[in-house]
Length: 195
Ligand code: PRP
Image 1 (tube, protein in one colour):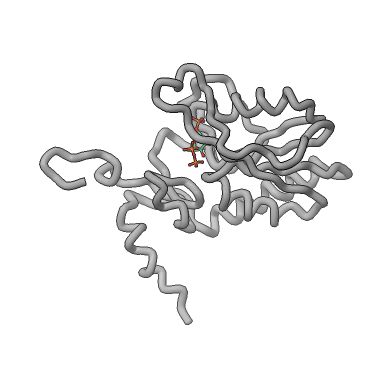
Image 2: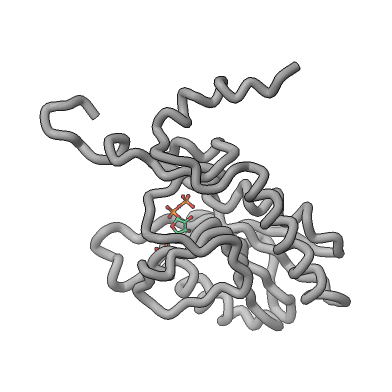
């Protein structure tokens, strides 16, 4: 049976273009997994997925690390618009286990302003882990509001409105297997047209 790509057209019609295909993402994720496995040789890191955006990357990345790891999740919500400058992040779900003396690898879908990760790193450092590193599938360095450098980066991109592979607009498009640039008409209210 064919894979029938037309079946995705209800979502892909909203894309201006595909930025990374499922295959390109998988190739890069496998490379990152191999790098991480080599760097953490003889250590058993605690790999922490930051919900919800990182869920696809996390699932593929952890399966590309042929080593002993443990996993946990933390759920955050973007600061409301008034909190952007403070960078305060709401923790919707905390870790299940302590991380003291553990080697922590935070897995994030995208670093944009850097506020979410810089807040999380500060918060988790106070719990005395042995180390903290960051793996981010996408990096938008031009958007940074605070200095933040991920240790493992899948792709560095321009300031584009991207969706798919975990990334959403209004909670939609997360299940797209590829990463694409959303058509402006899909997120802008156009005068005189229905949105
Ligand atoms: C998104 C993304 C990162 C954060 C990046 O999360 O998943 O966590 O924003 O932005 P920053 O670098 O400007 O802080 P969001 O709060 O939208 O939640 P989600 O993961 O559930 O989509």
